[in-house]
Amino acid sequence: MSSQEVRYAGFWIRFIASFLDTLFLALPLGILIYFISGGQWFDFAQYQQNLQMAMSGNPHALDNQPQTSFRWELVFEFSVLIVAILFWDKWRGATPGKKFVHIKIVDAKTFKDITNKQAITRSLGYIPSILLFGIGFFMVAFRKDKRALHDLLAGTAVIYDENALL
Image (tube, rainbow, N blue to C red; front, top):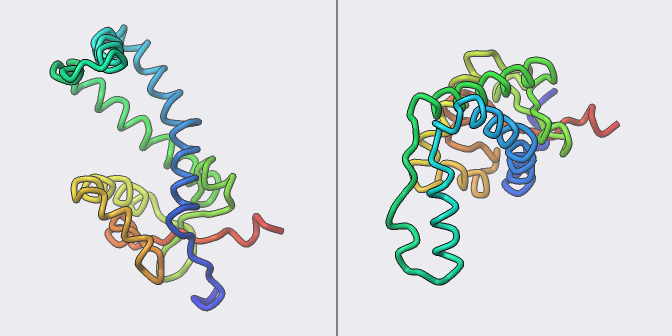
């Protein structure tokens, strides 16, 4: 595949894929880990109280934030990473959300499958993408090659999977 045949996936299609992955991967994992932690991951009662206060119009609804367990948060983040890598490996650069919208992650130079090193670097690259006020994600909308900061760091690109469209 040459770079002229490549159709880079833009911001909105990637957003939809991420939303689907959150819904079908991260949320179920989060629920599972919450129950495995015996409720120690975060104080769900405080979330409920904050929500009730916010719904009643209380301006102090977010004054008290729930306590979270850093250990269980790491378990969750590591689990999401492992599951994503398993999908990338099995489905050649796609998670369920990406598979559903016919896009995949590839090496930016060769357009071949990514390595586990690239997958891990890309996942860790979400941190600076988020910490820079999300600019790392919004870059996709303004770049010709539609690469986000985490793609640049990992040497990856997200493209349409032309084989999936056949």
